[in-house]
Image 1 (cartoon, rainbow, N blue to C red):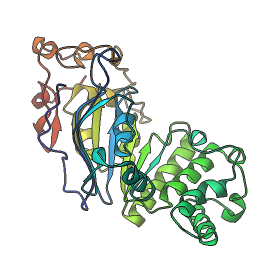
Image 2 (cartoon, helix red, strand yellow; image 1 turned 45 degrees about the vertical axis):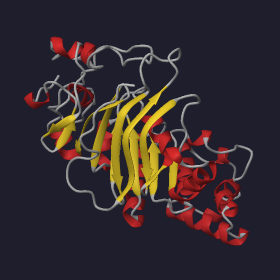
Image 3 (cartoon, helix red, strand yellow; image 1 turned 60 degrees about the vertical axis):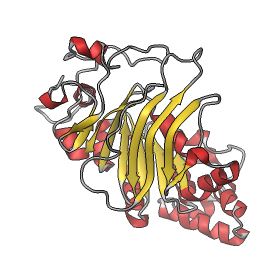
Image 4 (cartoon, one colour; image 1 turned 90 degrees about the vertical axis):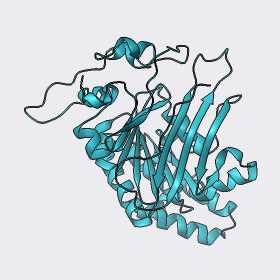
Length: 338
């Protein structure tokens, strides 16, 4: 597999704490008859304790696969290279028992659709206490802990909520329940995979505020996955931009928004609607993302890029330092925009 070279995992200001997640040179490749290119190629990223890191890109860029790799959930039959370290231990070499402990004690994940995460036939109390009881917590203590968690995420009447079924909650309230479940074991790392996509704007803002508060109070590292750069700017300290299974740019959030170095990052910003009176209308990115059946020899973004050079279709750009961040573009130092 051709891997993307990563001179460093992180960029921007020093992180506030020790790393809770380090992904280094992660490659995920399906058998040749199932895909022409890797799902992930040389992906590297870092999340520190108490830090929120964004992972952004269009659907199909590989964000969810990168996240699931942290829990050891990889496509069947995939060939995997690189390392995924949580608190210094490589997830890819863990036994089944070690993975179970990882998923119940160290890492928790909040998925996009909360209704897909809960059993509609069971009460919320069963959902919240199941993991606690499996870890040896007495039933009464598990129930008390569940009430405490529901109160922490803003559920009114937490004791009554434990007796309800999922269909008795709105989408936003049920997402709060799922976040409460994710926090039950006090994980060092929380992965939020587009947790606000199916929610209205007001509820989305409430969930973002909730995640920000909980991260600050508990010192949890947060990997926040989204396709919305504006949303990432509201919550993230640093951002990684992913395209066709590779990291194409990463830097501190403020610098990324002020001066993106990669045309794909600039394109994502340009197609985001803005409410300012003098703001230009959004401009959609031309073309479409690459499918797994396509494996161009040069830059994967070249066919959609207005600034592509002949070499862009022949030579893949390396992820290299540019200013205080990293960019994989032959013209990164020119400061171009769409």
